Amino acid sequence: MPTQLELAMNIMIRIFHQYSCKEGDSFKLDKGELKMLLQRELTKFLLCQKKPQLVDKIMQDLDANKDNEVDFNEFVVMVAALTVACNDYFVEQLKKKGK
Amino acid sequence: MPTQLELAMNIMIRIFHQYSCKEGDSFKLDKGELKMLLQRELTKFLLCQKKPQLVDKIMQDLDANKDNEVDFNEFVVMVAALTVACNDYFVEQLKKKGK
Image (cartoon, rainbow over all chains, first blue to last red; front, side, top):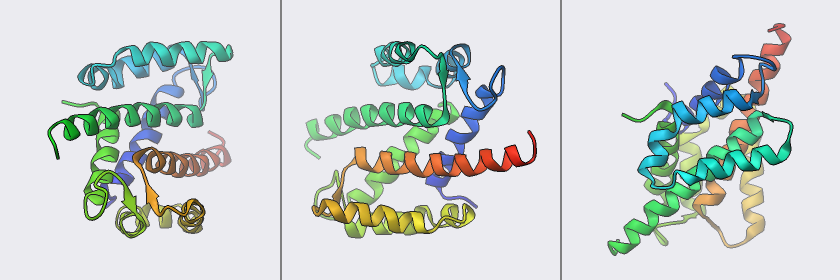
């Protein structure tokens, strides 16, 4: 029985491969696969955090690479950056409440 | 209803605060809190990956900072690094099987 944190790590690996295997290199996301992943797996969360422009920023950054591919390392860095942004928002709200 | 990836992000935030609030700065992990988190939340996963020395390496790196505190950003980077290591192992196994 995995712990909650182990479950979170398993999910990141599973979700990446669920989309990366759709076409082309099975171990990388092309732009279409990445866009589909973002739209299907992160939309609600980003809306909830009131920072939907974050996805546009990520897409722009990936465009700058010009290889149109995202490996697992880059994907995890993206998820980490989004999670930090969400945590910052959460902590800000907690501090406003004086906790 | 959150997606699986949103759930993973929520877990990372929740687990961090579950341990960081135990003593001292509520928004940072001291060494005791970090060690407890690693032992309780990641042991099985690391054993499964046959790379238990990874935790020692992380602890050493954190010691080098000498402030004995880990903020959320550093925690997420650590989880990301562990997840990449696990994914590398997973992909290696898949490639060996010729998939």
